[in-house]
Length: 226
Image 1 (spheres, rainbow, N blue to C red):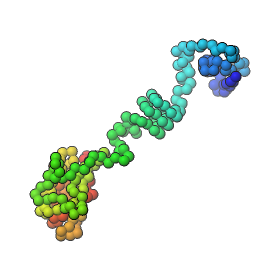
Image 2: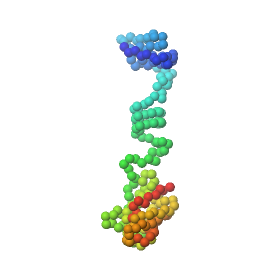
Image 3: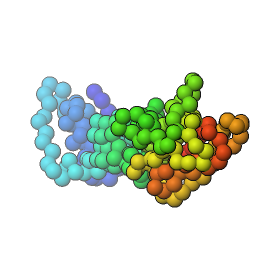
Image 4: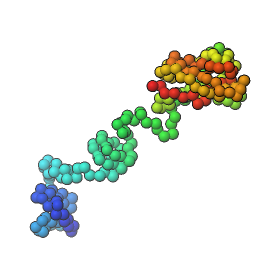
């Protein structure tokens, strides 16, 4: 036989009734002890069939609402959830399989660990921007000229270009990879060199060498789209 003692702060008539009903439903042999100390017992030989009406269910639910949820497959609302497959609303969740927003920001605003965005677009490759004039990749073990945009909207350039006319247009970035205003970057250059060279990335997508070198590195050039 199981005995449940109701703490003094909870010894209201409504609470006692709820616990008696819950005890009878779960165990059938439990003893619910109220403030008076009298015990309500059920015979162990048979369990009464007790049906809770909607008011009973609502009251019992109110007693456990707002509780801490350690694990939940689904939670409409939880103050704290250690783990939840789906939560409509959670103030704090250590683990969530799916979250529409986090910290007031959409899920798309965050970078997923282990990802860096799209693949590099290589200048001069099929379907990609062409080199202008006589500019081309230096090769000789150096990375080819390329660009990509990462998950947070920053465009990155790489590679070493050569054989062009100093101070001329090298290639044009397509729409979606252009800064809102023109930007100037100091980069490593050579022949003659080593030295620093200016590379301008303009709002129309033009990537222009702005100096005297005919070998220019694009590594480290990066800018926001907005």
